[in-house]
Length: 355
Image 1: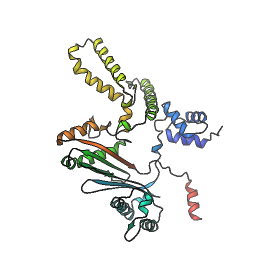
Image 2: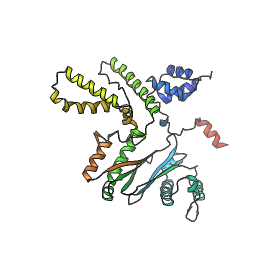
Image 3: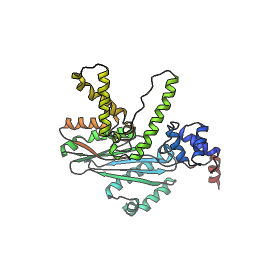
Image 4: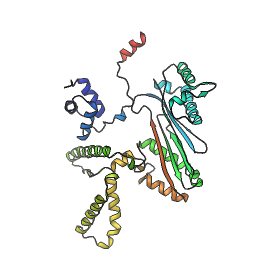
């Protein structure tokens, strides 16, 4: 049995916001495995903040370069050791020029990039010279380039603080529609920057992930309802499902039958059911696709019109332009996501620098 130290309990508490005793019990149950303990707390509705992706640490900048004809765009993340350097004009210019170089050279990997030439020298030498000039270790962590095919359009957005960047590519029915939708695609990028979808569509979600997250979702709401009950406030409805992937034909048939049964109990005339049922079905879908709304762009409610989903807004825009718009590719970089700050005492850091 692994030792459950106070430091480990505190680490889990900081990650999840759960109580100390709950954290200790979870760690004991998982024999000190902190990732599994996070899952246990979430399944019990005790770890709403238990998201590994929230443990951001690295400094630096996310940069976006967009071709003027909106047929190609590149996004990159370059990390620095401190926020001070990230705001330095030399570093800002370096990240922008590097992103542009990546797009111009059409490289796909860091190894390919390092062997390219810039200003008459190998990029690796160019990169290292900036490390020496700026005075901090720099890391070209990742990059991606999206291209528009025939009758396609690409656009992007990087937030003013340089910590979040997004690229979106769309396929359209014609070059005319593609050109006319470029600014609209940029607005969708701004939505994605703010709302943090992980995927374009619910069809990309893994069934095991959905099952696990649905359990956590229900537990979160049930836990919240305990407090609402104590305060004598209206309770939230606990969903049966979390994603459109779970709403099979049989599920929807049963949902419709339940709606019809309720209308019959309410003595609603059958001749008006066809006006009521579509709205009730839409409500059922919205209530039972909360994971789609959290994790997928097309299912989210649009920030500029929260009565409509992004998919509905795209359909309306396409109709307005007299064509079709289909999102086909999506990249979102948030600075430092997935990285953790090293656990070091300030006094130790100073001592280390004085060696």
